[in-house]
Figure 1: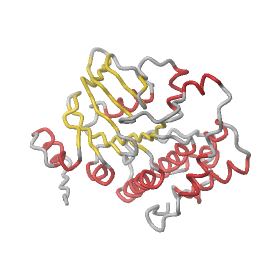
Figure 2 (figure 1 turned 180 degrees about the horizontal axis):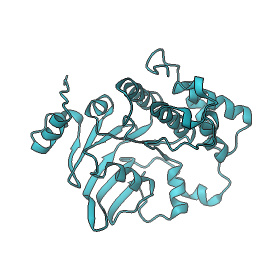
Figure 3 (figure 1 turned 120 degrees about the vertical axis):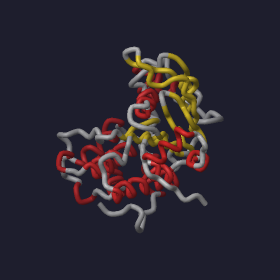
Figure 4 (figure 1 turned 90 degrees about the vertical axis):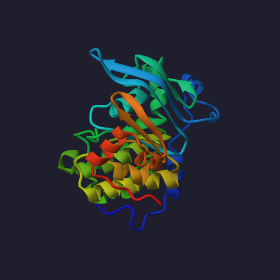
Length: 289
């Protein structure tokens, strides 16, 4: 896969093409559900969220916010609820208590139909890519466009080509997912996520089981999407170096709770012994400007 940080293709035309993917909905209920203007304040708010499974707490009294156009990295050891936070935001799970707001709208009491409207604004890139095994790379990326409707075949082809080129997968367009490496699957999953024209992209452990070079390329791609297309991102990771390259803010989860929420510089210099132990175990020494 070509390094997306080298000689990047301008994305402004892509932004114009993606804008075309939002035809006026015919369904009056969807129109009514869509906000008519951008609410003030953070795009995502977790307020005192609690959830557990089989009498075992997973998140306890967790609160954080994500501002529009910013990147939040959620850090912590395995099993502390990092990915659960993303699944709560997608509506795959419901909290036991607490509030989750998306663009000022409470989502914890929404039914599946209501969550479908939220998922038009928020999309998730899963660890395994969650690609359709029987569809080629091209067909996977095209799927959200065809599902949404309103575009001619040549328009779909044009946008798919741009998205595949953006993630450096031009040489595998007709391949099935089973033939792709883990890094390639995640790059294609990002392209498919972009085809849904989201406002927020969630990344679940994008660097797990990929080598450092692919991890850096994925990080560069996420940064470019933020910088040039203005996406809001939440990145779940255990990799502090990866977070250092992306984060505007950091949420550190430890023993079911939000142990730290704030700038990355404050996190790596924190006097909290549990944070320092986490940094030491991962053997990270980050240079701070």
